[in-house]
Image 1 (spheres, helix red, strand yellow):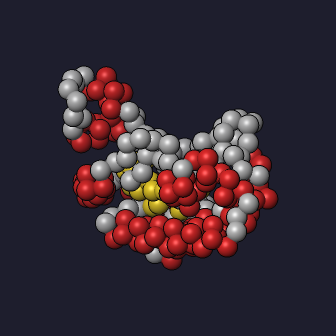
Image 2 (cartoon, one colour):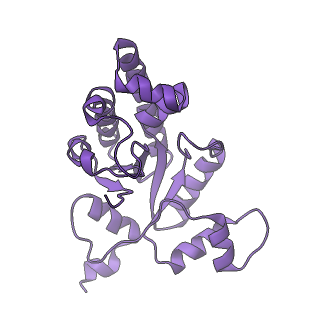
Length: 227
């Protein structure tokens, strides 16, 4: 092992990997670490899970990154508290050497939250001028959020947009190329402009969308499921 490998932190290694370079080993991380899992590993009881317990678990698992949720996705009835998430973002950044991702909505999630799930599918499947204007406005707001998260200490932005299910995308790829991918591309470009990497997350079967996702300029993809 070289001296450079010894001196690099987990944060350094994730940055290296996202830049397309081999960090010397397979890196570890997870989208969400459940509170119950933390309690079981550390051996604590009660509703509140202290930050020190989470840190201990990630150290034990030898994780290189941590994800702070600013959204639980369009389908979740409960969303993270923004102030608490900002506090955790800064704490992980200042008191650990892990790479800190901020998980936020993408354009699809913003549409689903604004219109409701079924209406979002209908409107994005056959978008008109109104739909495209609304998606553009939502993307501007998301870009502003990404800039704010960068200023608060995020090392990278994880864009969470569940656009697929087990079999395929929810919407025909041809429609997504008009109503969705141009706006995801703009959001990724905005993240790059502030100097951060952008990683995309979606559940479901994304194989039919891989070329479109790569064309947006994302630095990584999380959530691939077998076809």
